[in-house]
Image (cartoon, rainbow, N blue to C red):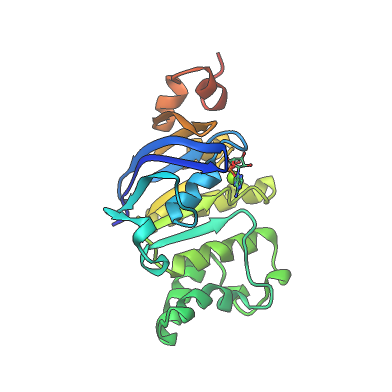
Length: 238
Ligand code: ADP
Ligand code: MG
């Protein structure tokens, strides 16, 4: 299970309200993409969903449980960042396994999960390398693998392809889509790229200045954007 309910979430940093009342429901197994311009609050919303940041008001429920009162290890969430956030001194294998080791998972089980994840992400030849010996695309696959081995019910991706060149962006995007089909986990994916949003999403959430402008399937938004803003981001040119 990995359903998500966001109820009137607001977030302010000092006097500045960055999230101005977000309501959203995500069903188990859905692939939801947040799009919107830089600074509109996408990363903040993702961090609030992950429980990394407290909301000022409102609630985030994952399978009915309020994230802010669930201990991090029990939330069933894994997050993938634009900058990979790998440990430079650890091998690929140990980067992927560290979280599990710290959680007390038996070594044989860690190895089993790393085997599956590295096969899914074509990382088997690189398991003994360190991040500095990998390309950007390989590093991002390691970061995704590190999320996969935790077997989360909810994956959160924050612009995971932004640091990759165009060809790698396409490849990695296809891998993420394939991962979603195989794992059937719920995925929330932040991007400012229209193509990524259109190709990956079951449902697109268009954000602007801390509010949701429109929620809908890719073709729905493309064919029937609710306003000029959505049309500018997703809709067919008018
Ligand atoms: P996005 O991911 O859509 O580019 P962010 O969620 O990162 O946007 O940021 C939304 C707004 O909140 C920006 O104006 C940013 O400067 C501000 N902001 C984000 N995090 C903090 C913070 N920790 N303290 C103060 N302001 C922040
Ligand atoms: Mg961001």
